[in-house]
Image (cartoon, rainbow, N blue to C red):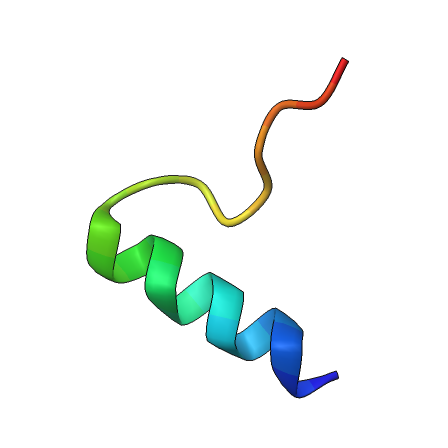
Length: 23
């Protein structure tokens, strides 16, 4: 989905992992 690309891009710009650690 495009959402994944948008999230990944945003995370990359912020300098964080695209997949947050969920418990």
